[in-house]
Length: 183
Image (cartoon, rainbow, N blue to C red):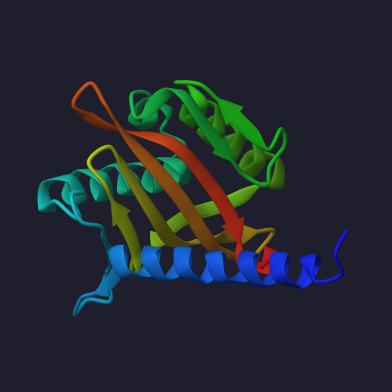
């Protein structure tokens, strides 16, 4: 093998990577509006629909509120048939159309086991919202609070949601919780 082959190969790979990234950056741009909302622009793909945004934010608010109120009925029809929900409570993931119901039930059991009182959830400002015709990616800061044995409880973190358009309806494909202490 020629001793010049490896440097040429390395240079070719690096050059190709730079050109591919430059092409991606040129055709995929993020815009941040006055409300610090991030929107992805890609030619030929729907970037953001006010109606879709309102629907998705409504679903997210329903899920967050239901998790603090232990309202399994509220989340019963919000997930795709192959949905995945992940959280830090065992068994750590739930699958299928009832993933949200299973997750809210686990949150309720955990809160009861810990004797957590006055459990509340609040969402922060959404800074990441990316949309195509068939998918939406949203990162939602969330703060959970309450009281355990007279002591304040607080956990903040973020949910990452991926929505898919299924039968003309936005449904949750995945929902993943990451506590800020885990970052």
